[in-house]
Length: 47
Image 1 (cartoon, rainbow, N blue to C red):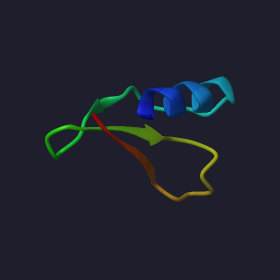
Image 2: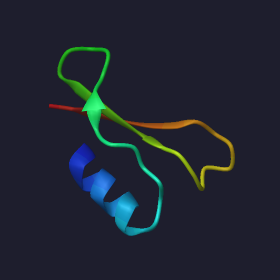
Image 3: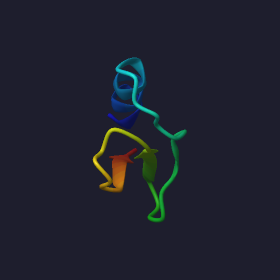
Image 4: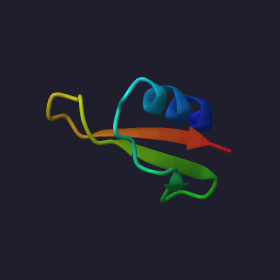
């Protein structure tokens, strides 16, 4: 559940982008911008 994951990461102090539509139909994504040790981190979710 991407919404629950987004809420939990935000609550724990991570800088997380807003949830947006993914490239494939029926998917949503958000990006974790900090505390990832320089590793680009994308959270994927399906409807």
